[in-house]
Image (cartoon, rainbow, N blue to C red):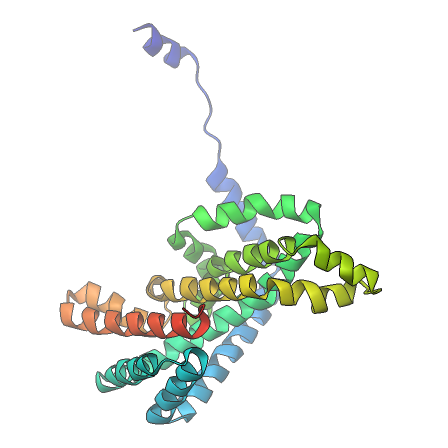
Length: 282
């Protein structure tokens, strides 16, 4: 009873955090819409270019190219056979246009994420101040639910594949940053001292010692970036992104189990192929 009376006497005003965020977003939209449009045009051009290029190649030729890449990368005939059978199944199910749209979105997202993430990881490894600033930000980015990324992308860039790609970039950018940073700081001091002893400047140290030494970790970051980008395929369909995710979302709305299963199998096949192509050989 006493606690109830105390809570009635002490009234703590509600912090209008949502109102502050809305005001900040409105400020960005009103003052930087031109910048957002320019960035949106760049992303749209990138997506269209990849989609046009992939559509230009006949499905059978593209399947054989990917199978050859799989064999060259892993030296395993079984993986090449899986690529042929898996992608051939997607083609047979008449999901090839959606597959191409999905691949174009993933490639665009990963390229943008890596172009931003790897340099930030290098900067993070060389600046203790930048490291401490980005650490809580990356923690926040990796723990926030993926659906939340759709809100600012939708507000800044509207409905469509561009918004899905941008949300995917933000969602998938953390692993390249962190694993690039981790790879560089784990380089043995003896290698760095040898570089300094031979008179290497900072630029030479980066490209001849640090990046080659950190390459396994960087490749792991690329692999994780691709997998996270693929995991956003279905989620980004909620804001108008096309591809296989759109079919999965449509199957949910009409409760078509067969349609959803076919699209889901397609996503699983792409995930396995990309993981084997860009993952670590076993």
